[in-house]
Length: 120
Image (cartoon, rainbow, N blue to C red; front, side, top):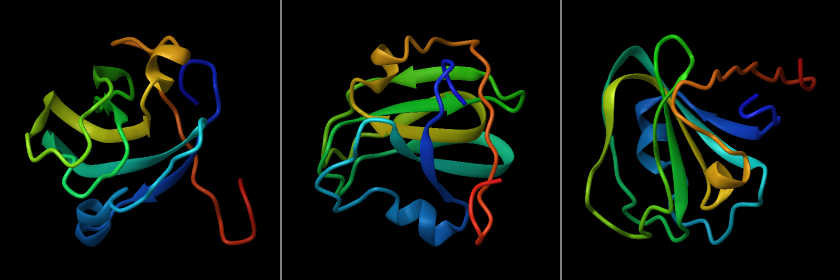
């Protein structure tokens, strides 16, 4: 739950999933995203290599509040996008969703994981 809105996300926890992320996808529907989990929380640097669509990146602190937002990131860019502090997770959303949801630093974020037999 973020900005009072439920977002359906894929969860990336392994190094391989972190590396692939949303690369090569031609679209990402509004209200969908990918959540990257970092254990333990650490300074994170993202990039847009081979990512074909612009994204909003929401950096989430260890206390599950928004640390920083990088809006409308540049597709295929190799420039690093810093978290700006220790980060537990990064939520990637379609560009424009951060504004649509009125997201801002300090806002709380929560998530649950889905089990194989459906959402919990």
